[in-house]
Image (cartoon, one colour):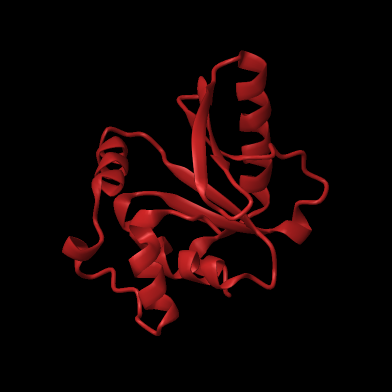
Length: 148
């Protein structure tokens, strides 16, 4: 679970039974979605892989329900059950890779609260993260086919 204050109300509403409506972008589209959409329009490929424990938590159910928002922005999203990743060497933190040259690690506390971002451009670290991501991507299930 991520403790992201900007999504607390949406998550609480979802827990209370509200459905995720992607048809009205004015209610959820934000600067992140614009950044992704603009990048995709320039020809950038944006891929997201989620490695998840099963059975999934309520928060992962919520993420799955909201993933269509990422797809609407232009991301390609896949899911990999953690049980299928045991033989993969994965970084200990979530991360994004930019242009194959920079990794931004997301550091979170045990309760899911965001702590900081850490940037790394050492070629060996970028390669290790890129290789790990590709291994997950090759094994993961596309969002449309991953059922919770």
